[in-house]
Length: 294
Image (tube, rainbow, N blue to C red):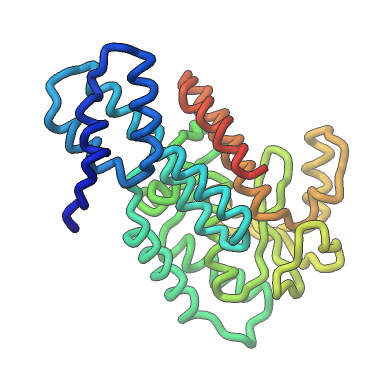
């Protein structure tokens, strides 16, 4: 690990973390936060050497605030500069719960998953045959499983590291991973923002990727249920599902949605999951984080 570059001003500010005057401390806190992520090692060192519960609470809050601000900025930058990279946003969301998320470790696993699928692919395969190969690698070889409706959808099931470690996920997390692998192999699989159930669609031809809203139903070959071992189904089954929900049918329920819509949906579902755990602090943070996508 590289040695931290000392900054006298930062060190001096952190040494005043026990300032009793709240107004003065607010100024100190802001100045430390302005250093951004470079302040975190200094704050962690101070935490390790502190025996004061009050100081530790202040240090922990500062570290959390800086990490959140960094995450907000990175998610906003993703939206502005690189929204086609869905996997990148997936790793950013993982950092919401796991600040020390090991990008290299888990992206290496995703690369191996892609390699396994690539070795079985052939350009002469039909769309259904390519889907069959993807499903075999994804569900049979790697063993990914969807969390059944009767099982509780936990907060953890939304994060990339948990999905890769446990080989279990929900419709969104499995779907995002499936999309990422397919598109990395130039297979036109995209997400569909269906009410109460996120599904995938295989398009006739969709590279380069078009903006959401530019697709038509004529381009849809079939749909894929990532929760059910990649089972293939048709437009008729989507229609029946919408009728069963008794909601007004919309064109968007049949067509690819943007990656921005997918990540917004993930954050919204995380809010619901955290509410079910009565974790109001995390809900408030997510309400703020989703603004990075506006």
